[in-house]
Image (cartoon, rainbow, N blue to C red; front, side, top):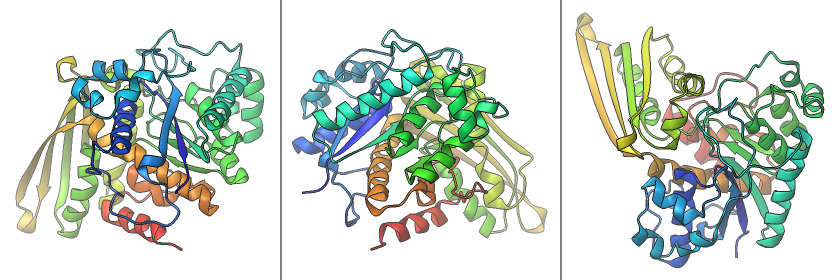
Length: 392
C-alpha cells in the first residue's frame, strides 16, 4: 500500500482541477484507464499510486465540484455518474482573492481574514485539517488559480526573506494571493508547485525559504499545448540548421483561464512565460516572435492554437511551417497537475528540498535551483526527469 497523498489545489473549482479530480475518482472506481498520464507506464519506487491521491482545496466559488465541472463543459453528466459522483460531495474551502492582482476573477467564497498573517494561518489550518480528516500521509499544494498581474519585484517585501516577513506583518500590497499560498505551504513544510504564470515561490525570498527548510518546490506555468510543440519542434529545426526568421503564435479559448487573460495585466504575465523558450533552444534571439491570446467565449475549454514559422535553409531558400493544434486545454493540463503532485511527494520522500530542476519538463518557465537560465528543449528535459525517476 502506497502513501496517501493529498493534493491541496488553489483554484479547486477550475476546469483543470475538476478534470483532474474526476479522473482520479474514475480511476479509483475502475471506470477510467491511465490514458494520457505521462508517467503511468513507469514503475518508480516510492511514488504514490494514482488511486492514493485525494483532492481538496480553495476557490472563490462555493459550488460543489460536480456543478463546477459541468459549467466548464469538459465533463458530462455521464462522466460524473461513471465513477466521479463523489465530486457532488466536494466543496472548496474559502479562498484568498484580490481583484487588484486578478481583475476579471472574483467570488463570494473568500477567507475572512484581517490581514496577510491571518490569511496565512487560515491556509495552514486548512492544510492541517485536510491531512487529519482524510488520514493522509502527506499533502502537496498546487496553484491552478487564474493568472495574476505582474508583481513589483523591486518592492522591499520581495527582496529577502526578512523583507517578506516584514511585508506580511505590514500587509504589504506587493504580496499577492499566490505568494501568500506559497509562503503558507513552504512555512508548513508542504511541497508546492505553481502551474500558473503568476509570481509565487519563484520570488527570491520564497525560493530561499524553500531551500532553507528543504521543502520541494517547482514551477512555473504548465507546458501543455502550443509551447509544448515549440519545445519539441525548435530543437529539430536547430539541429537541421534551419534558421527561424520569425514565429507567429495565436490562441483562442473561452474558459475561465481565457477570461482571466482578457485583462491586459494578467495577459502580460502569460505572454512572458510563453516567449521564454525559443531563444534558449535556438541559441539566438528570434526577432519576430509574436504571441497573441484571445478570449473567445464560444470555444469554452476547446482551445485552438495557430503557429506560422518562417525559415531560411540551404542556399538562403525561404520556407514556412504551419501548425494548427485543436486541443482540450484541461484534458492536456490535468494529467500534468497529477504527475507534478506525485513527483513533489516523491521528492519529499527522498529528502530532495528546494527547487526541483528535474520537473522543468512540466513548465513553460522552469524554475531553477541556481536561478540561471532553464533548459527548455523537451528531449533534454525528459532525459533529466528520467534520470531522477530511475534514481535508487
